[in-house]
Image (cartoon, rainbow, N blue to C red):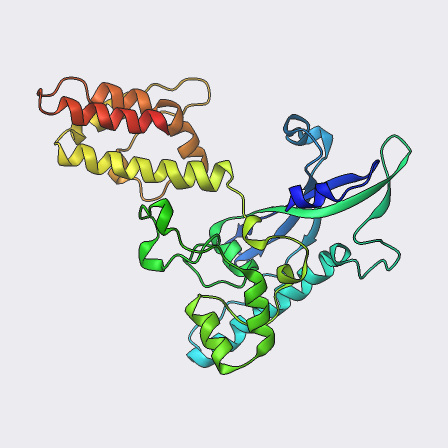
Length: 317
């Protein structure tokens, strides 16, 4: 999308990729399960070094998204109606926040271009484009009007998630323009087609903005690497050690890792931890390869090829 827009720029124009971030935050359990859902924005013209400096104030909060109403012990029909109402309220808030990108708020804007006062005191003709949206998987489902536990990049069936699929058998990318057409049709056949693709009908603001909606989700370090891939790798290592009866040695070496700077001492084995948070996964990524390497020392000649393959997989990630 950005490449196509960049090709249409005139001499002196500036492309401004907009990067949005949202994450529901749990505040307290003592006063009615208080939560907040802030929405932040930054621009892609800044270097990552500057953007990550808290003192630079490069990320600003633009809105507090509405927290969905939680209903318990109500009929399923009423629950579905309330969920639909929650989606409509969320989309109305997002529509008001993202309205300038549709060129309807400022009629003088020429195809999305605005004269922007920059930090050096000069006005520049800028074209803001929605380029990325960072969130976790449940939020992507709510924002894009998709059912839970489905892929937001392609139309992969739920029972094939996580499986290896050859390149010649890849599932089609999600076409939100088609979803918009089916939602506007408002027929039983269109609703059935949306349901088969695990998509909720009704209005969705992203389908009315010049962008490729399936390209908006971007991998981030917390949800993709630490809580995602590293957690998956650690489960594989656990079952691998258990299968080859090396789990006791693995736990003993892991618990012997000393506290160093910001590394906290380990007091429980892997199977005794009920849930890992982002900080624990970040710490674990710093010593996991060393622990696996020490744990797989020795073994019979028949086990060495398998152990070497496990080390290669751990090192690759």
